[in-house]
Length: 191
Image 1 (cartoon, rainbow, N blue to C red):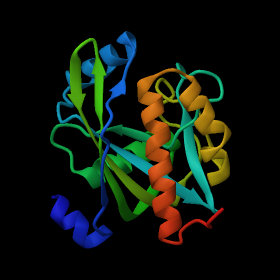
Image 2 (cartoon, rainbow, N blue to C red):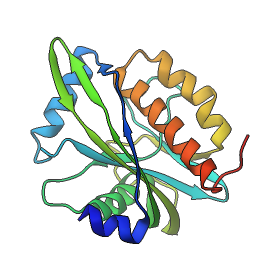
Image 3 (spheres, rainbow, N blue to C red):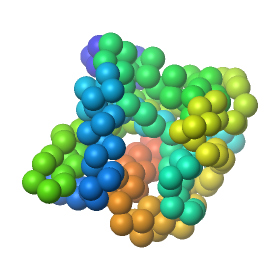
């Protein structure tokens, strides 16, 4: 499956994160629970959806104020990565997307109280084909909006880090790697 992706969407840059992400008890419990819900692959798809040079971000109801991040979601047990990416774009952002590039494959480890979960994030560049910027899964997603790359790497990144949550700190680092890759590819301008 990933070989076919590499041929159609390019080979992702492989990113091994040497330091584990320390999680708080509740976020680690939620991570573990998500894997018991028919999603035992311990992997997600993350989407950098560009609209007019800006990036789609979502806010979950339980996020601290000012915390936004690109849409992402767990890959279901028998689901292809492309199918998962399209489903998440529709559920979280209300958008039908065309995947343009397989940007990154990150391999973080999340830890809490001596337990660990090894993870894989598949990061894609996508463009809107249709739909309206409005979440369909309103239980999971509180809001969706567009931000500049500078906002994502500036004030939004600072809020992710300041949250004190390992999962959000990971999302800040993922965004750093993805934005660097998008600049390298000439998709977004260098700052």
